[in-house]
Length: 114
Image (tube, rainbow, N blue to C red; front, side, top):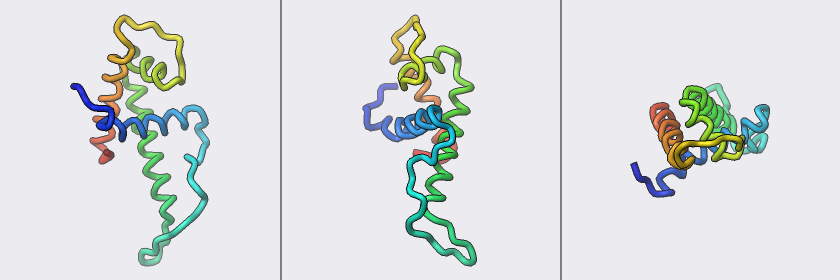
């Protein structure tokens, strides 16, 4: 499956977010504490809360897929994102990473991301 770089941009966004989370699991994802809010009935939910909730969901999905990847694809994801670089591959790491990224994209799509 040959895709153009723009077609992968959305999944790269979530992979990058996961990488930042892997480096610092307790982070607030770089969002401001509060801005505009929306009042719905008797509940006020800030836009940032929704965004952070969606981002946390995406990180959880990427992390789940990473844990379920075959060892070579999991290692390629770590290698390509700079989380770890002590792996040797029998095929080009880019090809292995492509398979891992496609699986992450499929899982994110299944959960309504894109």
